[in-house]
Image 1: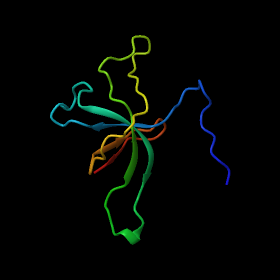
Image 2: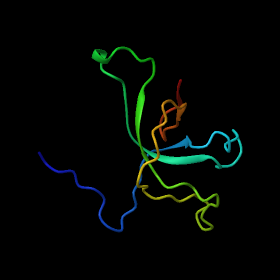
Image 3: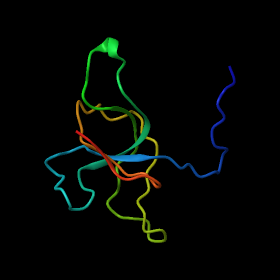
Length: 108
């Protein structure tokens, strides 16, 4: 086996992200990012048939630090970092994916 080589020190990481509802009481749809937490999408998968049937794809997410509510003044984008420990897993969440070169996908 050949070990995977990650990004070198000082290089920018680019990956797909999801916004997970961390606090439903604080999150109001179509408001700001309050109550949401970013997570890196590591893999989207379906369970093998031997585990029974499940109607939707599943995703493995790696938690990132909460957004501070203020975008970066230069880029206008929010920043985040790897989080340890990860937030507790959500038993079920609605997932909307929008790829750069594909139409939007919605699960659930």
